[in-house]
Image (cartoon, rainbow over all chains, first blue to last red; front, side):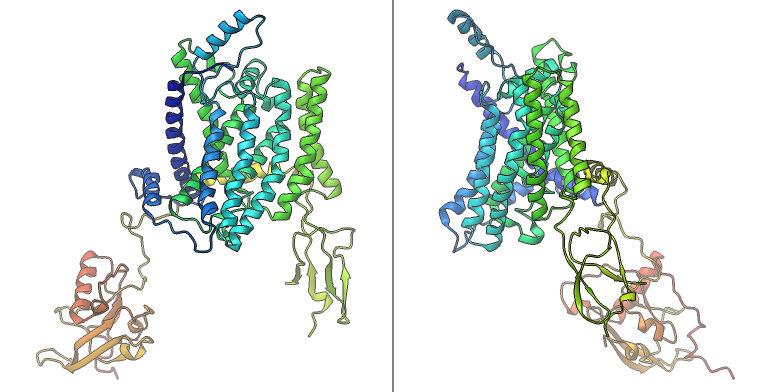
Length: 425
Length: 186
């Protein structure tokens, strides 16, 4: 791994953190605004023109509020939790490319050639804080799973039953969804031949977006990151209607703000990952090579990647108001009964296509047909997450005795909850 | 009595077909609804900048109507105070001045506790001379409980304000002073 200019790196770090933090601030405003529009309201519009200064007001409030610690809370872990949550989210951002990137050079024939190639590589501009990290995507996933420690520590140390329940749900959910998350990108990594995110982008520039070859993997990845970020429809760890905010219940002021910063930073990271892994990063059907000037090309590539990132960020918000929250058993059923088998099958398909060097469009076909097959299996076996556990229904006999009965009379019945005997009008 | 078997109607859940079990088409259907709402007309009224349009029979702050000569129309009959379910009207009657034609009494004081009032409009219905009316003024505020007890002058000034603004025309349908003040037609 070549050494990089540390001053440039520092400038990029500070610049990127500043940009990401303001994006997070405006993401919260966008979330509130879009939520309001979806509900036919106008949203926050009092602070500044169109409410544009609202994030500043929120941030100021977080700083100025008193930060009490519950008497029964574990003082150390209670304070550590938001630090873990935000720290891991920021660290994961380090390897994610946000602008133009150059893949690490291929192995050189001799030492002299290696030196020149590496020197040239170190001198080119990289739109990443830590370019050339060969374990890139694994590093992001490792920090993503560390982020759950923030949630668990916060929930447990608060000494509050709702917080603990939220933390328990978070751990179960994130452990379950990390499996399809990891397996869905195996296909991507197999074809790109590297875990390095820059190399993955370079592969897609040559061969086309992974979305077209592995649409099912993208779907699984997207659903998994929604669960990883605790976003609706998988926001059971927070679930303000059931758990009064879950693991966040006992947090206020800047500690709450840090949790929120961590959560939204995590969202931004995953949006970048979705665009990089499946939507070709800064590539856009050759449009990215419009300018020969390196600065203009760099800006264009950054803008393309940012556009994709903001598209997914918008999806996060719109999906939030489209799909209601899953019940916990449905959440687990979706992960273990649907997504893990599907991602396993998809992985095997990718391995077969790669090993026998079949044309890559075979994988696209397999990917789509696996998806359709899952639907067909759900229809024929009633085993999908839509179908709740079967319930026996009690029916009153005319004599007054109660006997168990499966209503409908034509075989098995599946109900989402309880019996609904409705009086004839 | 136990429910008869024939009275129970079993409702079957619609069976999910292949299209529904694929999940994604329905998600896109939902997203379509969500996105159309983003661009639909908003139902919010930005209140201080944008005043609500109220129906003419809105029951807001009371007013005491004046007759043509600017005198208080009220004849101090206590009908409104009697009809009031919240007991918020307090009237002290006095003999009408000698030069007031055809009037026996007039209210010396007339106070309505606007905090106690439930804005039911019973006083308006009870009044035989259409002297008390509810207006469309809705944004009444005060710094103390005493300020919210409206006396006769205040209620007459509400009449002046609302008739001048044209928001609440006088809704009197009866004669000069109303049937109670006139001699019965035999």
